[in-house]
Every structure is written in structure tokens, then in C-alpha cells.
Image 1 (cartoon, rainbow, N blue to C red):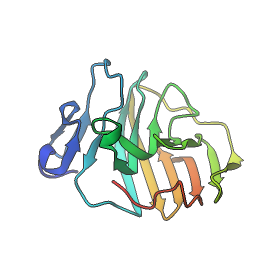
Image 2: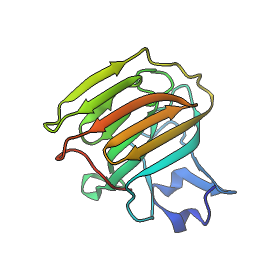
Image 3: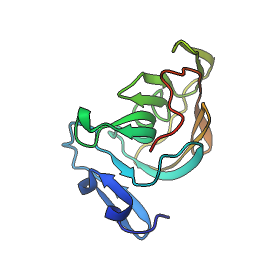
Length: 174
């Protein structure tokens, strides 16, 4: 549950969001051609665990951005950083680790990846990506401690990544 008003706690593309009864809801009419972000006004965070319930639409392409920074020089409310993808139509993307405006796909769904100090990603474990039904609610969980990232959907681990790249990784952000 979130407290306060949308304008007091968040900044960015606020027209696409509402905060009612402690629930943050984003909506679009399908005409959005570029990513839209809202960002918490809190100080940058480092280690955290976040659990959110997400309505996953069949045609949607969304994500949970974290340890990111606002880059107005790239456009209004543009974010650069890590993202847990929310993409029901493509199992290998749903729950994966993506780096927005950066190194791109760091870890597909159902993979465990180590990115070495030179920025090279190594898949050290891989299974068949799980499928999650669209047009329903799913619980997404993101846990990040140091350079270790983990994502889950409905209690099933979807991505695990160790980011050892000192030039590419971010250890804090919004």
C-alpha cells in the first residue's frame, strides 16, 4: 500500500497513472509509441526486495524499472537502468532482466547468467521458460542485493543474474 498523493510521491508521466486507496495504477489507450515512466521521489536505493501485483494484458509490453536514473537529455522522463520485463505473449521475455537504454537483454527468462568484469554475459543455467496466463493478475517479485539480481512471477524464479561488470552495472538508483 502506498500513501500520499501521486504528485507528492512520484514524478514523470503522471497523466498515465492514478493513486487511489494506496494502489498505483497505470493505464494506456494503446497509442503510446515510446516508453513512459514514473519515478519515486525517494532517495536512490541500493539493496531491496519489491513485490507487486501486476495485471498482465495479452498484448502488453511493460516492466518494473529499478536502480535506474532519469536521463532528460535523452527525452522527457527517459529512464536508463535495470528492468524486470512484463510481457505475457513471449515467455522468454516475461520476467527477464533487461537494461533499458543500456546493455539490453542481460538474462532471458529461465536463465542464470553471470556478466563478467569485461561485460561478457555467460549463461550458467537454463531451463524451458514458464508460461503465465495473460489477462489476469500475477505477483512479480524483484530482489537485488549488491550485484545479485533475482526475479520471480507467482513464486517461480524467472531470472537470476550476477553483474560483475564495474563499468556497466549500477549498485543504486531510483
